[in-house]
Length: 115
Length: 108
Image: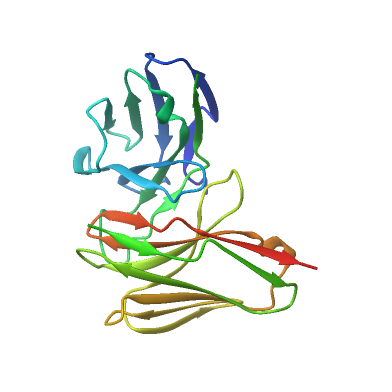
């Protein structure tokens, strides 16, 4: 079975531009979470979507937005890019959302570089 | 708020045992996860604890004490491929909060 997939793998943008990152969860999983990982730190929670509804949002500005589609894939959008947005963006899928035994499985990530 | 602490780096010899400690203070708790992350790659799931005690999975074991806000990951019979960052993460409802990770270097 395919794991979590993300595209693109790498992306280079300039300040002020916007970016769209994509994620397809494991087949049968209905929840997608997005994390930002800056070099040398652990992943930071951005959003979780379950059944196409936003379930939670981390401490990120409104420049960050996301959505989930009927097939449970998801997009993360970031507007007005800043240098500090350079990071590895990870998508994780889980069967449901927040259950005690609901393990999150991570995709390979998208490496975003903002110049 | 969430506060999850783990050592920054550890070094051990091939074939040895290493214990990575994690202490946490979080507003809620639904379980504690350990992930392994090789440089430039995504975290991969290693273990999960929700009740106090030891969970064993092959060469890896994880322990939890909820009253002490403490967990450890035990890596036995270390192999060179175990050189990686190990992330401690607390699940609070739907959200995973991660520590900064412990970089383990295995030397021959």
